[in-house]
Image (cartoon, rainbow, N blue to C red; front, side, top):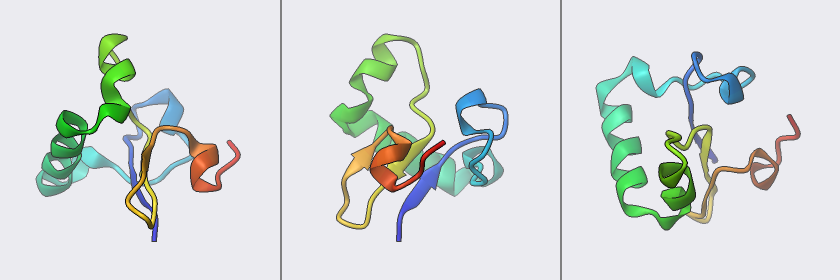
Length: 72
């Protein structure tokens, strides 16, 4: 199973349903991931949140929908 973090207010997440803002536990989980994974370094440097974010079945974290098999 692929875990997806996103928000409806994010223009890059418009076609992705999960909303990290709807549950404080999911938000905390995402923030822990964002604070510890180097995948988010460029997003943070650019002032971005880093969503949509995909955690693949093997635990790989990516910000590219294509890596998760989505072609948006």
